Image 1 (cartoon, rainbow over the protein chains, first blue to last red):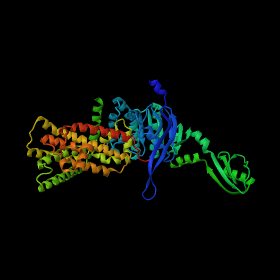
Image 2: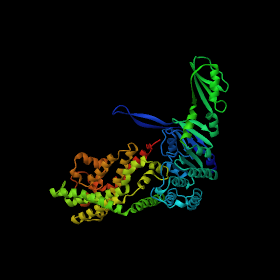
Image 3: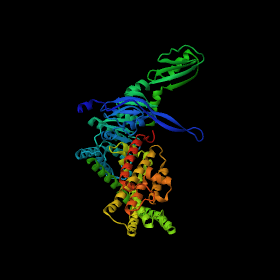
Length: 324
Length: 270
C-alpha cells in the first residue's frame, strides 16, 4: 500500500474549473449577474518530491487554484487529487497530510506565544509527542526561532512571524506544502533563510512543494519546474531554463514600410506576419540587436515607423520579475 | 467517543487561551461585564414598567413572566457566551481567517465556535439567574421531580436552540458578507420574543416562533409545564414536553445548513 501511494503523483488536476458569479453595475441601480471563469480548464500533474513554482499575474487564477487544492474552495468542474484525496470532499483528512502558508495572512493565534500555538497544533493534528519535539527542535534550530518562541505572535516582526508560520505548517510532517508568497515583504536575510529551509525539507524529507511567488530569486533557488497561468489557463509548464531559452530571448520588430511588398528577407530574423505595408519580424536577442536588424531592413526598404514588441509570454514573466 | 473527548480538549485549550487573553486586561473585562449586566437590567426594567400599568400580561402574572424571562435570559446568555462571536464571522471571512480554518483537520463549525469566548457576555446569564431565583420565591409551584429537572433541561435546550438558530443565520455571510445587521435583528429580536408569553403576540408572529424559528420552545412551553398552566392558545399539550426534540432538530438543521453553506464559500480576494 505504501509502495503504491509512493508511486502516485502528489497533485493531479484534470480540466479543473472555477466559476464565480459576480454582480456588476449596469446602469444606476440595476446590477447584473455575470459569470467569471477564474480557473478555466487547468490540468497538470506534480510528482512527489518536486518543488514547483506556480506563477502568474494577479488575478490569473493562482490563489483560486491553490484554494481548490487545499479544500478551501469547491471546484465548479474537473477532477482534483491531492495526496490521492479529493480536497473538497475529504478536507479534514487531507488537512492532516498537507501544510499551508498564506504569506499575507496570519494563521497563528494572535494573542499566543509561538510555543503555545505549536502546542495547540500538536493537539489539533494529533502529532505524536516524540515526533513533535524532534520537529520543533529541528525547525527552531534551522530557522533560529529560539529568541522569540515565547513572544506573542502579534509582537513578532514579519520575518519572525513567517518563520513561525513555516514551522507551524510543517510540524505534522505533511507530504505536500502549499506556500502562497512565503517571502513577500521579508528582508533579504529572512528570504534566504526561508528558501534554505524549504530546500532542506524537500531534500531531507521529500516534501513536495507548490509555491506561488512574485520573487524570481525564490524560483531560481528552488523550483525545478514552473507552471505559469494567465486568465485561468496554463500558458507554460516546464523548466525555468527552457522558459528563458524559448521565450526570454525572442522579440519582434514591427516595421511600417512605405509600400506593401513581399516578406522581407533579413538575416537573423523571420517574418511572422504581414498586414499591408506593416511587417512583423521575430528575432533572437542573443543573435541580432534591434539596431542591426533595423539597419538591415532600412537597406532594403524605406521605413516610416517602427516598434519593438516583446512576446506575450515574456511580458508575463517580466511582470513576475518586476514585481519581485 | 475518543473523537468527542479530543474535540472537547481542544475546545478547552483554545477557549482557555482566549479567556486568558481577555483577563490580561482585567479592568476592561470587569467594566464590560458590568456594562452587559446593566444593559440586561434595562430589559427587565421594561417588563416591570409594563406591569406597573397592567396587572397581568396575556393573563400571566409578573412572577410568571419573570420565570419566562429568567429561563430565556439564562439560555440567551450562555448561547451568547458560546457562539455570540458569530457576529464577527463575516470578519473572519473578510480577513482570511476562515481560509486558515479550512486548512486545519477539524470541523469548520467547531473551529469557528471555538475561536472565541466572550467572558463579558456572561452578565446576561448572571442577571437571568438572579431573576429566576426571585421568580421562584414568588411563585407557588407544585414541585415534582419532573418540574425540578425541567428547569435546567429547559436552559440546555434553550442554549442549543438559540445557538442553532444563530449558526444557521450566520451562514448568510457565505453569500452576503455584510448581512450581519439583518442577522442581529433576529438574534436580539429572538431574545425579546422568548421572554414574553406567546399569548400577547399576534397569530403570525406566534406561528413564526413555534413552527419556523422555534424560539417558543426556549421558555414559553417549558414554563407552561413548570407552572402547570393550561395553554390559552389551545395548542396540543404535548408541545410543552418536546423542547429537547426541538433542540435536537434545530441542531441537526443548523449543522446541515452550515455544511451546505461551506460548499458555497467563495473566500476573499483572488
